[in-house]
Image (tube, rainbow, N blue to C red; front, side, top):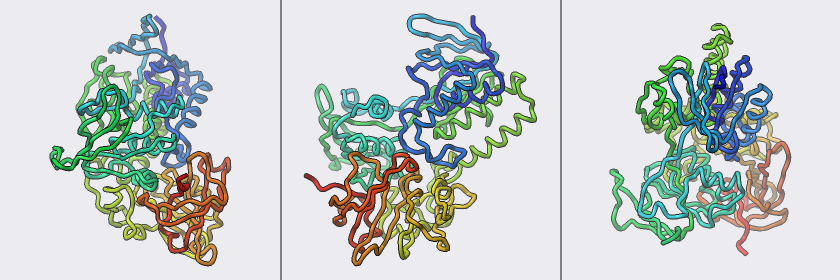
Length: 527
């Protein structure tokens, strides 16, 4: 029986981070993962992450995955793939199935970082081919280059549903609608806004009645639900679609921990059944630690920090670190994690009805119910200002942990401050030069450069654009408003690409001056 200092189960962001931290202290470390490639969900993520530099903000998920793999290799971590851990025992012995064979391994410490599985909802026709989970859609698009369908209905308005809806659009799918039984959008407003301005309608307080078709999905019927989530007769709506994508939350994959005799609890705020553990991942069984979604559903940025915490705890437990060094390292990580657990979407705020931002500004109700900030609401936020010449307009209206825009602006035109969840504001003392770095760096694609009077009667709007093929200079089309509806004609005057923009192209369009603060997306004219 082969023995290691540390066995990590799961090669996702938390597992790899844990292995890197432990191997860096000298532990002989192995990571087992059931998949063909390491990285967990990271390699499906093509969007830029939120947070700050220490949280790998404005870096795309798959790039973070590549960086973690390189760090693991340099640290001497052994990664075993296509290896399913089917047993975990209190004496820190695991049973691993690889192909048709079963192997036993022992370690002095174990870190479980198995992540979470997608939830599913049942409805008439839910087993038809064409009903898929959001994770499956991402696997098809971002790993295999396969379009999941031509016309898709998305069920779920959390961050996963919003992000995958946008990726479906990038993949060339038409998103017929985004549906959620909840009365308000569950994910970040910036994610909802970038979907809404492409023209995707939101149906809140609605859910699926029936998936239509015989041997595959050919359509779907939704209906409005009441406060008890019962269908309201007469509210049915039909959509011709060939795919239904489901993004209704995640459940921790904690079965191994229960098998090992760890104390468990049912905690709805953490996503279901999770191990009872301290703030740094130590379970009730000495030497068994947890990290990432298996101990409570959060973002991948949090999972990476939790992984490092667990790796450090395991290192101290096995005598590879002194308690003083452990405390110093954990204090730093606590600070970094605390930064991500602030704002409107902090774990402590789950289930709360928040009506104001931290600055005392009323929350946009239209954003929560329709996916975009209404015209009579938008200028209440500090990032939305009018000025002569080119200036940034930051339509970031919720307190989320993110500050790349502040770091990107060498002219210091954008101010967030030390508190990472503060709404971005314009610094009127400094002059914008229109470099566009703030637009490209914004993980929520919520920043625009506006020149309200670029020439007599016309304005220019520079926006983030991540669709192919790129429009060409001189091309004419239409400008869409925040609600995705056509507001005016538009002409492309410039399309900028740069390695510094990291594949976020900057499209500048000329529109009538009256629409400078309304035009937020460009669409080619239908052929």
